[in-house]
Image (cartoon, rainbow, N blue to C red; front, side, top):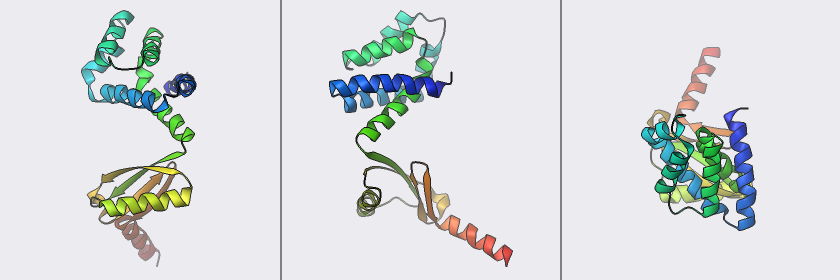
Length: 178
């Protein structure tokens, strides 16, 4: 079974429990903190992923690093570690966030631009995308000077490329064909 399939199953089960408890946002934030800690700390990954370190020791480490998590979420982490699924924790956080976003009608949008976007542009873009999609927008921005100008917007699996780089590429292809 793939890591993504495992992560989806665990995330779905945790999502149902968190929804009943009314703690979706808190669980999502805690899971993201764990996923981020694993992504940023190779030493933590090495310890948690090591097969010769006893499960109890891994659970103690998690309890020490994340003492303020809900007891239900703490039990979830203990279960994940006991089942040997710790490598899927970062993907579980991603899958859980997707479920929470779907529940709250939030569409994550990534915007890359050649220069940093002003607050006015970001707000206008959010409002326009919310109007078009009919969903709440969670906007993530990044700067990519290689775009030269304009922006690239990713809405789920759709990409709107309004960058100067893309326009120049299309112009070059058009001129080659002429």
